[in-house]
Length: 77
Image 1 (cartoon, one colour):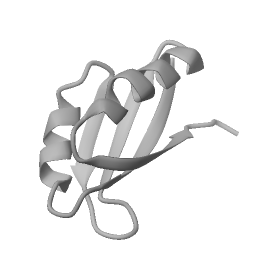
Image 2: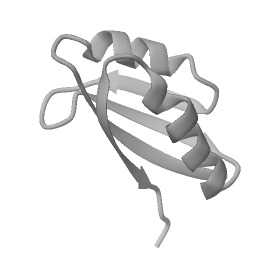
Image 3: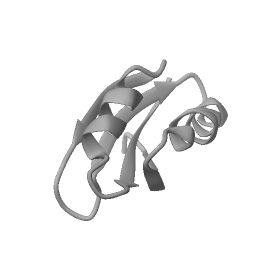
Image 4: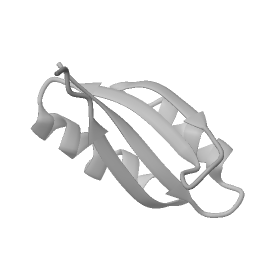
C-alpha cells in the first residue's frame, strides 16, 4: 500500500467544496481545507504508485475548482 499527501491549490472560495468532494473519492483517507500556500491537503492511499498517479490524474484533478496539485508520497526511512 502506498500513501501520499496531495497538496491542492483551489480557486478563491472553493476550498471547502473541493475538500468535501475529494473526501468522498475512493482511496482518500482524509481531506482538510487549510490556510497557507495550499488550500486543501489530502491523505490518500492506493495499491501501487501507478494506481496513486492514476487516482490523482483521473479523479482528484478533475474536481471542479482545483488549479494545481502537488503529490508527496510517504516514505519510511
